[in-house]
Image (cartoon, rainbow, N blue to C red):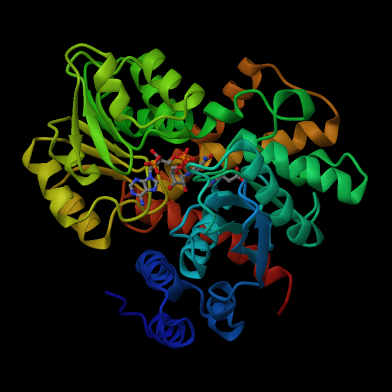
Length: 448
Ligand code: NDP
Ligand code: 2IT
């Protein structure tokens, strides 16, 4: 419940000015819940219209993306880039290619990204983009033509000092490669810092591929240790089986956890012996096949239709790493009833507000995605640093920096949660710590 009058007024304006955008409104409300703990201490914010400016994207770009499929038929998709906030650095955030992409989803992701990027301690503003294009079932040539058309419009809005996109759902090394090639051809300049998640032979950073998933586990490990626990011997369920889920599973296994279930949008696999990651990586990365193939190839494993059913699998720790609102109240109740003690978000906003309420009021440990998954964008920031230096760090160097950043995010969140009178509340800690830095920069820069 938002009880602060200033925030109530801004929220009412957001509801009026951004109709039909439920995900964006959900993210704003969630963040306001935390901000009301600090807004009363800063009357100067209201005078400067700070929150009104904070919820309004600096710029929204929408464009036509025409391309020709392998049958010679013309296809038209819609492209988006929301350049939300550049107070602390150039816009930074991923591109999502998925049929569900719309303005509401890109805006909620861009809004969350502002605070996430601030938490990393690196100088990056918040942005997000994407398209309703579905790379699934398309040939490499079709994906290339789409990416080329997409960047032929977007190139004029991005650059290492303005906006640096990267991957997200449906955008991995292949798509970044095609977009980088087309950008380089158009501008006739080798500008490494314009996109991150690049291949290692042309400016990509070692450990960027692993960074989001590893970072989630580094952050979760801090939370676990703070509560006198660890991953050792814990049964873990991870939803999704994309980039984030795969490397969360790998690091979690390395830290002594046993991952027994993973999913895709159609269903989940259960392997009581712990998921064999070599087989899973081969299926997902090399063959780009459905996760059901795992159960055909690994003895003792089962495939169950329906991705939401994954929350019925008994575990100690649940890590939703697929998409927004993938765990609702029903899923949360199943996780709680099965005796789990923690829910660590890997995806962006994977729990509905009702699920968060259920999990936290049942006393489970809970971490919001904007803190726990910040390792991906942090390592993108490290990729930009290496591009600027014309230098590359070893895997171990990047991994150590990533771990240090995740530890410092935990400390910052903890400190802010204590200052707000909610010690250990990572949602409050992440929202408040992330916001204070952005607020300070916005106040210093005047009404812009
Ligand atoms: P991928 O495209 O690599 O994988 C996405 C996975 O989630 C797939 O298993 C996919 O299944 C599943 N999925 C996608 N949409 C849905 C849906 N609507 N319902 C159920 N399952 C779904 O994406 P990433 O792993 O990169 O991203 C996963 C999450 O992590 C997203 O929320 C993203 O925003 C977030 N994130 C990503 C970062 C990164 O560096 N990549 C950084 C920080 C956060 P299927 O194959 O069947 O579609
Ligand atoms: O949600 C995210 O933080 C990402 N998809 C990564 C963004 C980035 O710029 O690396």
